[in-house]
Image (cartoon, rainbow, N blue to C red):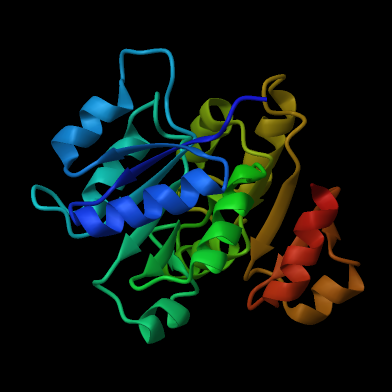
Length: 247
């Protein structure tokens, strides 16, 4: 089996050397870069091999790490490469409050615990399940994205039904979590169109909505039109349990 390749991007040479040595001892193939310019060269965008993971410092000299991560997600060739942020911009307390998640990516503050970092890397290599979350309420979307990303899921999001249908085809998520009250179309209609399309008909759909009170959700056994339903506000543990069942 080929070694997993990790690209480390950090302008601090000491950090780069120590981490490269530690990950090489763990059995990974490691390449390094010290800037966004070097990153572009290291990615070999025109070559056949891309890294399996990118460990990215946030405070690079030429561009902020979050901007790099966003550009990687926009590029069809690199959008599925997991990114792990490593930075001194956040304290350990802030890191804990954020649940090790920044912009849907795993984040560790410096100085890091190598054992915990290694565990996080192994989880990223086990193959994340991808979810499409569709909700026009930005607060709800943000909280749900953060909560599920912290559980190890890869997230794609949309705030319109039309975008959801397009993303379901292009991203092929393992599960779609769908609000019923969307601004451009009813969530039930979106679910029906997904089932009618041969490309998306096998993707499970879960409804998450404020249309039904908790009592109705429980009376109906959390099933509406053949789909699992959770009423807002939801219990994240119960939601994750249901997600695991569907996956």
